[in-house]
Image (cartoon, rainbow, N blue to C red; front, top):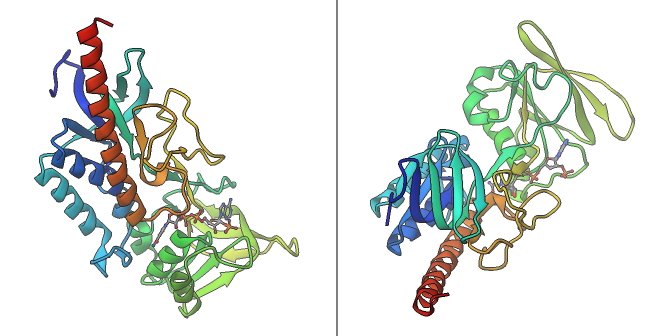
Length: 327
Ligand code: NAP
């Protein structure tokens, strides 16, 4: 039953943390299963979809704007009655009585018997001098947010994965010239995305090279110091923008208890999305897995919700049996 408890302690059967594609899918299925669930999100629902201009690998929607898909997924989930609350989760802890306690920056505290963590990730930073200083004055982690500021300019993208190639391609709508700086001699990205950058006349790839410093003055960034990892050369590259797409760090720092994870901090789950903490399920980018696509996030979340529903039923039966026998 919802919202019993003290003013600041809200009780639900299930708390879902993070409203990207995984969280919205888990929320939709939770309401279809008539669970008392709440989805907690600090910003607008949509997660990484909100930073993606064009999605061309979601089955049935060959070309869809990320923000439109986010809106549609949100409407779809709320159509079934999903409650979405705008709060920033700061901690998730399992209590001795088996419930979870979810605390928020704004104050409200949630209690639930199960939690699905779908909190996604935060972009990795290069951790080089000038990166902080020129953040918002040339350095960016979001092409869709900042691309239009670089009309007709020469810019750089760091990275060689799906995000770097997809966003580099998008940024050439604005930039006159774009250098894709990658530390190896091969891209990690899917072949279709590689082909697009190889054939885009505005893009030049600088191989075996890393950015070692962001350069600029009081007007903003005006160049990069690079290092060629094969020759040791350290040329300067004139550019007014640097977009960094070198992977994501999962947002698992919210967990106050230890859960099994891989070297990158992604939660290890079994095939039913169960983490090593009973009652805690993980789906989407927070989870250790081969790839992180919208489709895999949606699939994970479907499984996580069904497993959570089963867990809740079993817990209810156990608690009822315990009451009957007085244990
Ligand atoms: P990613 O696949 O982990 O690629 C990160 C890239 O950054 C790699 O090329 C890596 O180089 C490079 N890199 C990592 N640390 C670096 C450093 N310190 N300095 C320089 N370069 C560094 O990450 P992502 O591209 O952000 O994608 C994250 C996940 O989202 C992936 O699973 C991806 O498939 C998925 N995604 C999918 C799509 C899509 O399907 N359209 C779009 C975006 C993201 P190495 O190759 O040498 O390791």
